[in-house]
Image (cartoon, rainbow over all chains, first blue to last red; front, side):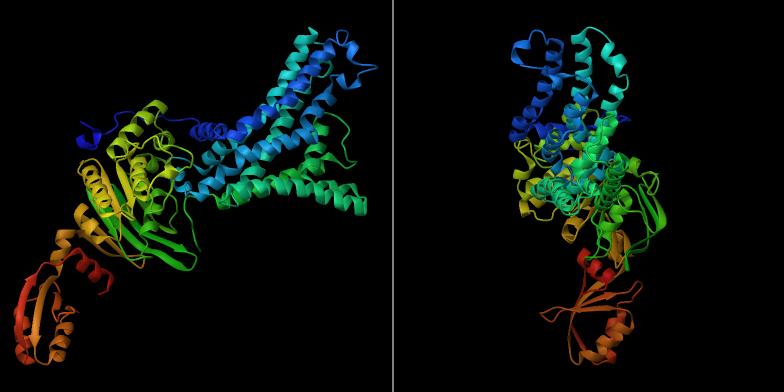
Length: 289
Length: 302
């Protein structure tokens, strides 16, 4: 006899008092991202730089073995905070992060808006905060795989390959820099992506916007800088701001001769704006005033 | 009381959506009726905590609508009016996902999702992606997600809209089966009056944000008696005197006059007025008023 024929049956289980009610949102978000065929191809490729940099750490400890490959000195294989900054805070890595958030984040809110799913979420015992945390954690997951995880692995591998704590004792603050930078850049991209995702019901438009705003901010910086030769125009560029703050976090010379705090303020301002827009755009019901 | 709201006011800008609504509802299936813009959906959204009332207070299943919204949503199921789903998920994942979000353990949510989909008749297509579902299947899926966590109170917003007659009958059967459980209460908001009449014993009628009528359908029908009359002669004076006696009149296309009399009306009055106005009563039958009549009477339309 099917359940339908038996009539409605009660569930005899008990609700859990979940500490992380947003976790199912994250789990499903990650699962759905990995279902995208193109992402399956792109994401492993985005880990290639990490593999190359890891190989660089290995080679740096085995320079004698690899001497035949290099004619003169190999300054780029000096493993120091600059090496970490080069991996984490140069434009190629920021661009990879951008491509990753386009895949994993563009549809996070826009799909829910398109299919009226917000009311399904908010008819459950979820707060707005839980919804945002669940969606944000999807982006955090992928960006940490690109930043925090390789950064920490590099440090651990360096220690293992060198067989001493000398590197750690020389730069004891480096793990904190890796964590701080990863958190900062991930927080920025999370706000940036969710903000743009909440602006349209079409995931493709969102993807174009995420990419377009990032690239055009760089183009505007270049145009203004070429015309006025003022370094403050670097504040217009998302990429430049991240690089400025990244350089400061890794205790390196900033790419532009302006204070990195200004760049941090610009990034923070974008996050604050994103938060206000998100709060306004994401609600359980459409209210037409 | 499962639903208890007092003096609820809510405005969308300058538009008054709810204007002092009071409700005290307990067991069974309750129909929520009203014309477009009467405030039905707004009331449901306030009861679910989507919206906070501008004024007034209320308790759903004993939980405060302003401060205990999460608890309300844990024990309440909601089937929205609009098409809504999470793309790229199959029906089982979709239903279990929403069960998990309600606080069910993961394994239990999955098991219960299968049961809920069997119950609503989607067992064959439960592994299909929800975006490939037809309108009727989506409606069933919305019902499945509303019952997956075994709620004590279910809000159904236009549950039969967009369904073919067979699909409508099947959904109504499911609703009647659910509401037959003594410990589950169902509140159905609908424009389709026969659906309400079939599934509900109690009705709440809203009009322009105000409570126009509420009570058991059978008792509400008894408040006004309905008489069907055919008359010959000069009708004007006869009709005017009936209206003066607070009767509501309706004339059908075939010349039948429907007269809804106020409570306590003595039907001998028809004959007295007819004699006074020199009108012949050719047909005089006491009829049964329908929910449609009751609704028209409450919202003041013919």
